[in-house]
Length: 332
Image (cartoon, rainbow, N blue to C red; front, side, top):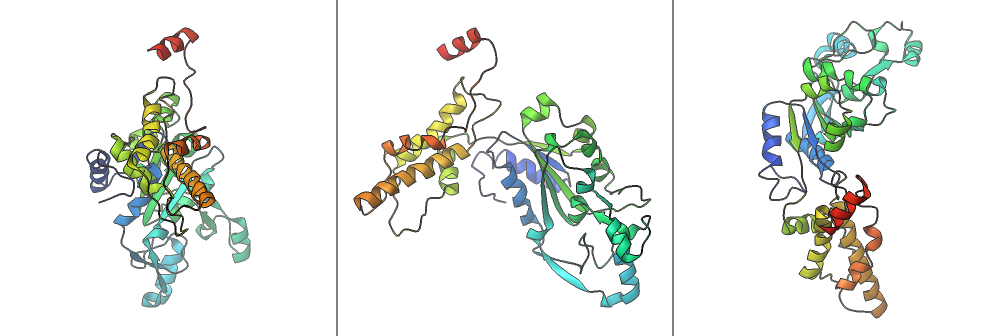
């Protein structure tokens, strides 16, 4: 099992915990500061799914042709039997992701009544066939991810209880149970999760595994991640040679910021700082190469100073506490 941005330390901390959660059939939450590849890890989980999966053609929730759970598919199966049309879904289509924002409604997540569908089909609003499924039922037989869970309104979090505990979806006032086959995963900032307390306690209790991510532990790990993620191959036909000391200085900026008492530790210093800084450094060197018609792009230390616009805005200063406390902190 390998993730694109997993460093050597995470292979002994984060990845074993994720493997254990999967083997335990747990819904999980990844807690970590910004720029710790939480979303990348969640999206990489599709690698554990079969590459192709049969589903009933035209079904909104990718129902299985062997034992469908929605009424429409059950009726079609009883009518046509083995002639039921099917399609094959790639595993990438079985991952549904939603960024939690305060304006998300229960209809977006679970579903609602569709009066237009009722009118066109000549159905009563009490008919199950008038249901418009939300994102979570549409992730049936796949993975449903919610990013920044603390930003989801409390009443919407309540709507997730049955999914996590009983494994069923209850839509509107319909007396039906839709037992979806879905793995629910979340991401959150630990500051939001603990201090601001926006994840309601009953929901926290229903999440099987809580996994803490982290920044690279060593300069070498950080450099490997940065060079892997940064856009360095510009396709200009001019070779690129990044001296080791330049890469070390770029990465050391992030490490120094994470240790500096003047930088807010609760906000964190994203790995994107190093990535953007290296990209800007290489771009400035490439611009000089074009102007001077040099044969290779070789960044210098002076190019790092030209990358300052990529650093501003990537971290927040610590403004908490009294002026005397901050002065003491800076002096130390």
